[in-house]
Length: 342
Ligand SMILES: [Zn+2]
Image (cartoon, rainbow, N blue to C red; front, side, top):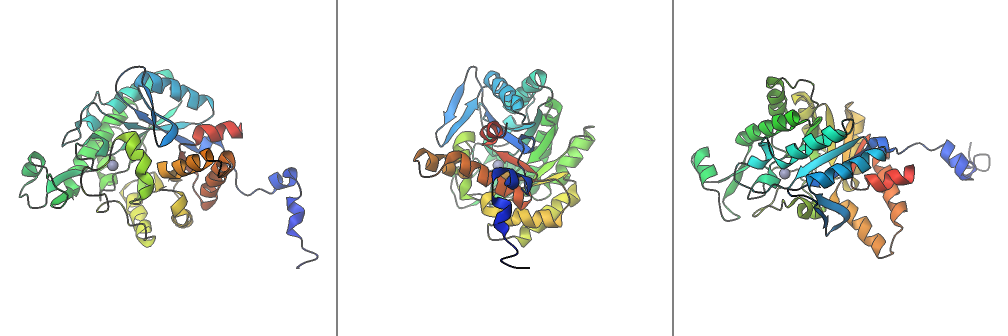
């Protein structure tokens, strides 16, 4: 039956009817709020390109975490800014690493807040890459770590040797109290290596949320300022995915599931909604999407210029990620959106 019998506008007449027939709902229970912890005390340093997002010392991170939890947001994800960086990412896996310290403190104060630990090496490596770097011509791994390349040309991100550090980092984070391990490095085989590391350490109940399809993206720019993780040479295109490839994204996700991922993630979100939708269609694991720093910064900047309505565009972007099929959304808007939803 077509017009004039069928009139779709009947169900759009007022907010009550629109609410009744709304297909997709947002709730604070779906949000994960990313936080950046740094050494020191009383530090609350705003990230220039991310208004309202801060580098927080542990004492300030506790306050922020309490605020997040009080808004009905069940989870945070922690990134760390270590005092020192080196060639083996010591700050990522050390017992007294900055994220380990923050986790212990936050879990002590707010035990019910889920703490996710981002597992990567870039924030802790002097060169800013997500794995061990060696000169392409180096003959042995030992030589590679001892003599990292100075120039952009002759280097390689070593896959298999990096897995050991990723597993070690995951065990260290889980022992500190991290509830969910979230590897974001995009090395091949990392989920299996992390699962084995956790299981060997008796941490059989710690779930893995893998950044399964993480694309090399220009939208990560502001994050690199927030986490001080810009690569000192080269870029990340030899390990993060090519933005043109959706079939390869499905293979990445499939492999992570085979290796033992409990949940999967697509990152970034808005430029990859089709990937989220395809993943939702194809896989039955809980699916997360990361609305990244650049997505956040664009909306903040345009709203500051009065070019768009901040709250409206924020909610529209979040509902679109949800509609595409993500049940979990990592977003810097978590607090603002939760306030609007309350
Ligand atoms: Zn990384």
